[in-house]
Length: 616
Image (tube, rainbow, N blue to C red; front, side, top):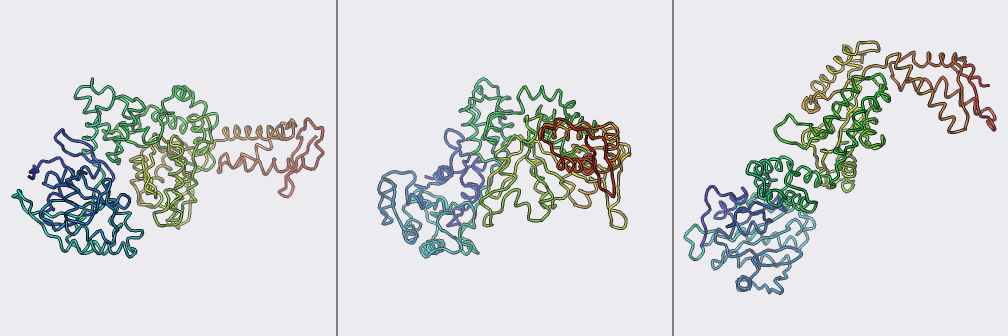
């Protein structure tokens, strides 16, 4: 006897659609999130069940006797598997069951199903599970595969709704239900203009589904029994927020992982992070990291000279990241990156050096950052390099450079150098990364940015388009820092809003723009002195020679090297190579260095743009 389904039934939406259409549709195609688990109402309350079990519970309430399930691996089986049900199938088909299974070829399968679909003696649903694997190429099937699809298409035309003994409700079809990941896994002609076949797309669970599932899973966490109703409700909300975009099966896996790692009721964030990044260890919570950050401003300032404002703001954002306060102003906990920094300013002033210094503070190795030169992503299709090529394209199996790197090192500093040189289509990929902290690669795998620190660098604002279309200098060395910061920020704002027409990217970066100042003469002298010491150290390491430089020579070199500061510290280094390192190398090459322990530079000359050093 069929059981009435109340209007307020907590069934998933696709089940309600199935119930509604059973009197008028002979076939259904379930696509999308078909390998998840689903909240299924039972006599004992809501239970998370896989698709086949949920489908059976849904049809059982409408008076169906059993499911006849076929997949290419196991053949045909009856669900629930009882001798009585096998006998009913055997009476209407030629199938012979052995150990609960019956073998049948693809071409013969439609003829075997014909008797069940037309029968008024039983009410059964026929499920073609893993239908995506029935054909090697759905659009160009083999002869046997074509016979299967053609036979099933004919079944859709021949089927009619039948009453069930003892059931006074409207006649229902004995439906044929295809279960496949995508509707394109079936031949396009099969679904085209076929009103008897109804497509049911199973979506990813929305927030309310995840919250309900989290409440069902809460008792599996230690400490739940002692929690009050308010604490349980807060747990369910937190779990639902942290699992944005995940399936209910993922929530079930997180719960099992938490039990295996003995994570308690209040450690749900650690359980989700462990599932996302594959490790329970969290470098962001290590005690030694806080000790490092206490002295980070002074340590970084020794490496990145002349940028007190940039260093101070960067350390503030770093502290916020370590304290887990990123996005704390929002209602829900999010999976956004730990921190986002946008370093802007002239070339050679320490933007990349500051990113290295941050990496040194966080991971004790300045080389531990993952760097992408965005000038390599100037083409429209370059986004495939970051995330991987779509299915069917060359290189699809390799995945993306960004997603592969982050999967290997989820705790990392990601440096996107010269971001303004990337194609706007590539920049669009950062919308989801900055907002949700996750992205899906070409292979369908999701990677999470929730434990990474993202750094963008840019030279925007130093030069701007002029009235004649050329580039004019917007800020120059010697301008007050407040003026440099204001003009650079305004130029960045104009670039994203009016040139790229993507203000949403800038909005997600927020107020995390750190503007670097030009190198001041006093700072340039410090940088020059450090570079000169490096040259002497290298000579000591390579040739065991102590190099002394006369004071007058040092002053002359400094005057040449810091005369033009428009190219920052990198320009000082380039100039030092030209006026000193190259002629020094030439002078050393021409000498016999055997037994030499010390040398002194007593003079440096310039003749016809050629520099020479005098050694003694």
